[in-house]
Image (cartoon, one colour):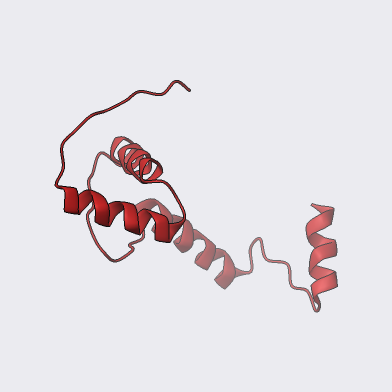
Length: 91
């Protein structure tokens, strides 16, 4: 994938705080900006929050998993870690 450069002006304090948070997360600021732009394109929405939120897509997946759990569908019960690993390796 080719790369492009975007130049835009932001407050110095905003840039410093964003870079600090990016470092705390262990990633470059450019990765965060790329991820946010991809999410904007994918969902056509912009969510701004200091608290993490589940997307509607993730909520649908979790609802399906919860339904499977309740009905016993796609569930394999094991009695030990070794048994669980053996089952996973057989898939």
